[in-house]
Amino acid sequence: MSRRATLLLALAFVTSGLLTPEARAATVTNYRGGNTPVYSRTSYDYVPSVMKDGVYRMWWCGGIAGDYILYAEADSLAGPWHARGSTVANSYNTVFRPTGNAAQFDGIHVCDPSVIRVDATYFMYYGGYGDGTGTTMIGVASSPDGLNWTRLNGGNPIIVPARDYRPLPNKYGAGQPSVTHINGKFHLIFTDSTGYAVDGNGGGQFVLRSSDPTFQTGVEELTATGFAPRTEANHTRHSLLAAFSVDWQYMDANDTFAIAVDGPTASGTRVFLFNSALSQQVDQFDISGTWTEGPAIVSRPDKHALASSTCGTVPVDILRSVGPGGPDTWNLARGGVDLLTGRTCEQVPQGRVYEGYLLQSPGLPLTLARGGVRLQFALAAPAQNLSRNAIAVSSDVFHRIPYGASMTSGAPVYGAPGRPAAFRLDDGRLWPVSCLEAITSNNSSIASLSVSQWDAYATGPALHCVK
Image: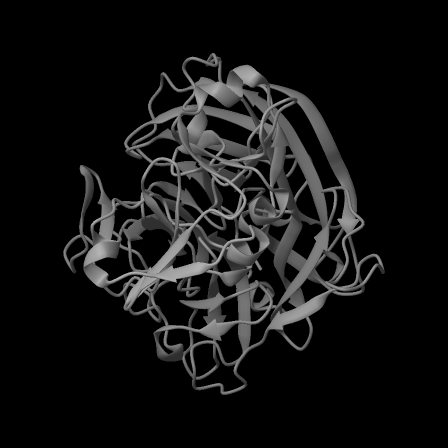
């Protein structure tokens, strides 16, 4: 039986005092999807995490012998979803298991994955439970490919319940994490039923950020007056939403956080839009469709919104569990809309919207949006080493992204002791590259410099191969 089923958490859907009366309903169009499962098998499946990383990649909590984290992929959100290396619909890979030691925080169940890729490394934040610990805590693991995971922080939890759970009515603890990466920092929203600012049902969403993926150093917490260094005095004293099991992403097109929450009824998922400071709700809209628990908002690998070929339009798709009865009948279904931000091509920060995408425009070079600028390629192979997501754009949108540099075939690559190999491109900068594949596929080779020679160059954005 799932850990969630044993808790019998009643879903809260109450907004905090931060939410302002002037928050309006956003304009959406192109409703799609419904209640028909796109993934189903003979056990329970819920709380997925979904990214577009070449194909659509999904990690979720599924029943095996308790809660395990499973994986499948598909060319379309409508499916068929299948295991890596298989074409059998509704197949899966088991990619993350409990340790099997009940005394450890994740010894019995692992669930609620939130998967993000930063440069070439995947991070998975998850909730763990061990019978010896008595409550849910949050851990993190890393992977080079999203399939083979290594626990970080010495296998210890990175977030524990704020208070002793035992005298409280809701004993769930700290879990249900969701992470996005913005300006070099991991932003984590999570449930803590023991938090000081929870509602009477234990519903509360708390926000941390840090450049450390394990949240052990440099941690700031969202307070009523903005982010501040986390202290015992401010920890979990401010709840952004009184809810359980939310998922979020950052929308660069309108500089908002989008937070998907199941409710307020069982016939739709609500998406709140908060300003970039998380100080005010500015919009909201609903995506119709029944649910049982735990939406996933489909994102690009760094957990930002997917790009559209139309300026100011943001595709917003979710996957969530559906089912006629108890958790053992839960499957996964898809729904979505297009959000019309009302912003024109001049108002949209195109470099950020298309970050990490390969841009395809007739008569123009294949181009990678990286660090807010265009990196243009003479050869397709090195570009495809550096990104799996491609999108067709107009020449107008293409040229609105500032030019950065061009990579010609055989462009020189320089290395030095203690320094990464780096392409020297026509902007005069060194663009560090983390993998040999991009070098060889560009017909380039590495020449050695002294450290002082290497350091004399300005550096451009780092380049990373995607496995």
